[in-house]
Length: 148
Length: 148
DNA sequence: CCTAAATCTCTATGAACTAGAGGTTCGGGA
DNA sequence: TCCCGAACCTCTAGTTCATAGAGATTTAGG
Image 1 (tube, rainbow over the protein chains, first blue to last red):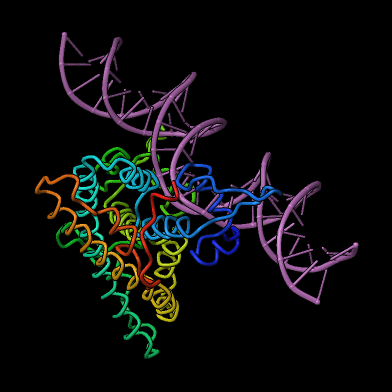
Image 2: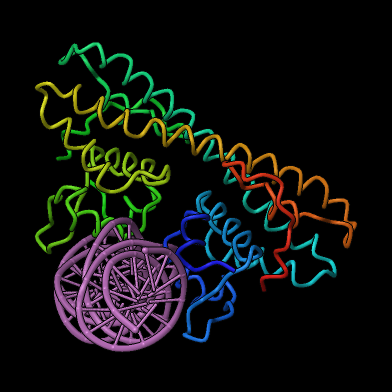
């Protein structure tokens, strides 16, 4: 039996957010004390961890709701789970690819600029041109500043 | 010279969102026709592409504003760019790591379940246990369903 | 038993959009 | 040249996913 505060710290989810998740039905209503305070058990912690991880990774609340509801029906769960997983896989891969590009650019910026040579850094031009592009839109001239 | 509709389609950003970006100062006010309609040039498209990519990758509007503002001051821009880059690098790496884990799990789900064997699939138990965990919280028993 | 910390509900704020109402402008065809 | 439907305009309101206070109540340790 743990309080909402303990659950909050353990799962790394803020107290109001836990109550919010209860409101929208992601978390079940826990038992209450005589004085109306929520008391949670380990199962709640695991569910909340699941929700937090999924949110961190960009799943919408709706997707999480789907996922959580699946386990309630043990008949033919695979098909739905498969669909949900497949729907996210391409997206996840695209995100990884773009983040890797971004990582490389950020590394470049940090290592190059940490030296302290200001004025020779074309970081922003680079970023504006290609760093964040997954779709190849060819060689376009950087005119970021012209737009502002 | 393109209309907001053309810009919207080309950049993949909805029309109201473009106007919203203008409101909050991410996009500059473009020229207008006699009849008060916005007309954009290529520079606007590039800037909007930059914004969209950055948003997709999880940068906040504030971070993007920082990045965009840097190029306006050519004096000692490196220091700021460096700081902004460094602030984001760790976060980007963490995101990549977690997404890779998620990718592996999703692949597993898709390949395993695509066979069609319903009822033998422990996808959800797997997810609930460890799939989405970056912080190792040890071997906890899956009791997701007990919480609902 | 007493009190400080934690909890309760409820309402409001925040970011980042998104949608709709009601009116105006644009551009291609008759 | 005029017309009309699509696209545009502003403005307000709603959405999602939280997060922050106000003011009242409960809990637990000394």
